[in-house]
Image 1 (cartoon, rainbow, N blue to C red):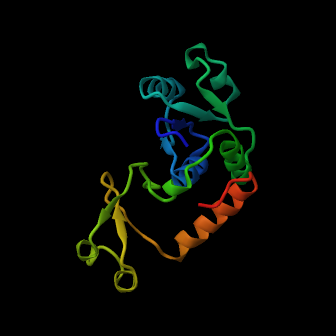
Image 2 (image 1 turned 45 degrees about the vertical axis):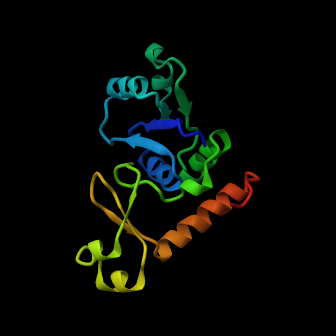
Amino acid sequence: MSEELRFIADAMLGKLARWMRTIGYDVEYERDIDDSVLVQRAIEQNRIILTRDTLLIKRRDVGGRCFFIESNEIGEQLRQVLERFKPDKGRFLMRCLRCNAELNDIEKAEVRDKVPPYVYFSQNDFSVCPICGRIYWAGTHRERMIEDLEKLMAEFGEDEK
């Protein structure tokens, strides 16, 4: 995945935006964004519009910067994105799933009162979102997400890390 590759997802693609962030893509998303605002941001921020809206892709001001998502099913949507825009596996889980910011490492001592006690005592590595403050750690949910994503990517002939 090229570093300058950036996306903005329309209102119909919130789940896709979240999964793409999990993979490491830079995907802006707002649930209630107006099409004209979405197009304006895409142009200003040099983003590719992800959409299921056939009217949106026909707009003159879009200028070919749309990628039409064909399926309603999230697995198929991800497959379509992965076929077209190859991800960088080293970027897995490096973005906040909530707000899209790149995560920063944080010292364990700094999260002591911000995570459940079991998590604090069972984990050593933590990350924090610099925008919303959400704290992340490598729990079993992370391992399952990586396994699921690697299986999906293996279907496209991607090599292991």
